[in-house]
Every structure is written in C-alpha cells, then in structure tokens.
Length: 408
Ligand SMILES: [Zn+2]
Image (cartoon, rainbow, N blue to C red; front, side, top):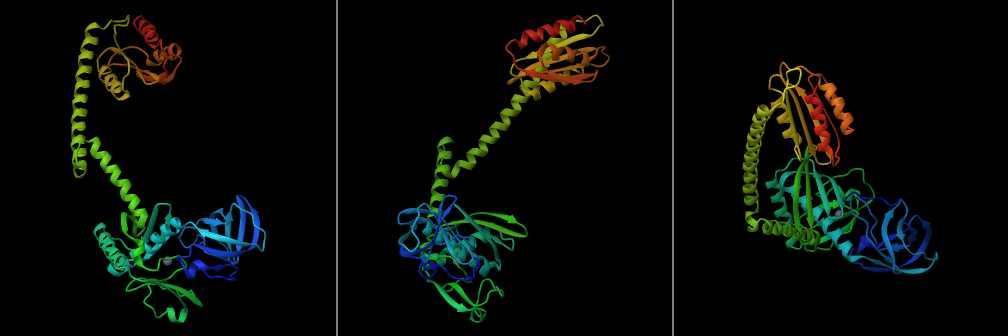
C-alpha cells in the first residue's frame, strides 16, 4: 500500500496508532448535507478511510450508520446517516468484523508479497481488493508450483505468529532499511510497517499486531498478466468462507454424479465420453433416417408439367442443421424441384432449390411461400430460403404451397 501524506491533519487518525481500537469519543468539526445523508468530519476517528487498496471501514457515529469513509488532503469524511451539531461530542464505533476481514487480507498481502519477493525476486506492482476478491500483480511470471511455495512460506510466517510493528521514521533512516519496495519520492516522517524476520514497507493501512491474526493465506488462482502474473488469494475468514463454498460445490457435484468427491472429475470425463458416443450414434441415425426418407420421396415423387420430380419434406420440430443436410442431399437429385419446410421453436423455416438439370425458379416459389406464410426470405433461381413466425395452421399452409409446386 502506498503512503499518503497529510497536508493538514484536521482529523487525528487513531487507527494508525492502534488498529485494535473498537470505539472512541470525538468532537464534530463539520456536518454537511450530502447526497446520501451527511458528510461528518471529526477531530479524531478510529474509522479507516478507503485508500491505497484497502477498503473503507464501516461503523457508526452515535448509533447512526457510517457506510463509507474517505480522505481528502486535509480531512477524513464520514458518510453518515445521522446529523450532529458542530461541537457536539459523539461516540464512534467500528464494524469490527469488516475491519478484521480487511486487516486479514491486507496483512496477508504484505506477507505473501514478501514471500514472492524473497523466493523468486518478484515484485508486487499492483494490489486490488474488493468484497471477497483480492489480487496482487507480480512483475515476473511465476508457475502455480512457485505460487504454492510462496503460499507455504507465507503461511509459515502466519503460524509463527510474528510481531507486526508500526514505526514512524525519517526517510533518511528508512533508506537504510531492507525495504521490499524503495520509494525515493517519499520524504519526511514515514510510517513503516514491519513483520519480524519478514516484510518491511511503508504503508498507511491498518494491520494486526501479529501475523497469527491473518489465520490462513490461500492462493485461489494465478493468471498471466501483462509481463507478469496476477495472483488471486484470500486470507482469514474470507479464505474459510471460500473453502466452505467450494466444499459445498464439490459435494453437490459428487451427489449429482453419485460418486466420491475425489472421483468427480473422473466421472465427468466418463460422462463426456458417453455423450460424445451418443452424439455420434444420433448423427448416424439421423443420416440413416434421412437416407430412407430420400428413397421414399424419390419413389413417391410426383412429376410436374415441366418433367421435374417434386421432392418436398415437411418436418415438425427439426434442427436447422439437420434441415440443411437434408436439403443438400435432395438438391443433388437430378431434375428435382426441392422444398424443405420445417418448424424450429417459434419459427417455420423453408428452403427451396433445384437439382441438376431441373427447370424452375426458386425465387418465384419463395415469393409464394412468403405470401402464404406471411414470412420473409429470398435467394436465387437455383436456391432460396426464408422463414415466418410459427402459426398453428402452418402445415395446411405448407400443403397449399406444395399443391402450387406440383401444378407449376
Ligand atoms: Zn499495509
């Protein structure tokens, strides 16, 4: 997290000195109407304002909800539901669950970043945190195996319950510390956060007093990001909730597949194989059906005055893909005038064509079809296609069209 410099510290930041404070008394310096309540400025606060990648604390002022806290150059603004007279004394309380969640993620980020830095020389160049989602961006590519090594190293530091200290030092002194990140631009008194035998960096966030509070650091995903790696992870209670959620998914999947959790992937692979086999069988069966239908159509085909065979197939609930295949096969029959009319969901589609050597005009047929079905479509003399919204009497309409084709 980046250091922020205070120009004029109007609000004393009690959270910087003691992140375990859950309540404090304060005096109201400003209270103005804001879009969603009141913008309240106090002389001191325990509520951390959003910044440097850490989320805002939530809490209350005299029992009135504080949904968000932000910091400007000179003051900290509490977005509060309540209005208070300037000069009045108020009691501020932090929503401890949120604070603890944020501290676990934030301190976990220090520890995990240090692990990647120490083990692989990878620098954390970006930190993102929102509800249930925390990432760091490393300036170097790491493998999943390396991420797990860093995770092991980081958790060891958590379980050793190492002290986390905050000190205020002049930048001239900070320069000589083994910092994870150097920032020569920062001058004056700097807030340095150090994990014993671990991470040292300048930071304005809230931290627990020892690493054990973080509980657990779990890398949940890594992916390539720019020229490095984005590492998603969760700490403490969020890691527990994530594990619980994933346990439920895998157990439900196991129940659905009637198999043990560790065999879920195996079962899915088997199912995929079975589905592929069935699809192939279905494809072959449809092809055979079409073949039979074509033979039947050829045997029964009426011949029009121009000497062309009229091959018409009308299908209820037919797949566009199958219709296309059937149309293709019928269109290969010499001297045939072809029509495939089928219903697919809420549409009735039609295709018209001419086999080799056939005389006729598909454009004229589709014009008739559009008229009868109230649809749209067009094409060329050799083939045309279109469709119309489904109507209950679509089969009668198809018969009407076929009669016209036969008598053409
Ligand atoms: Zn920090």
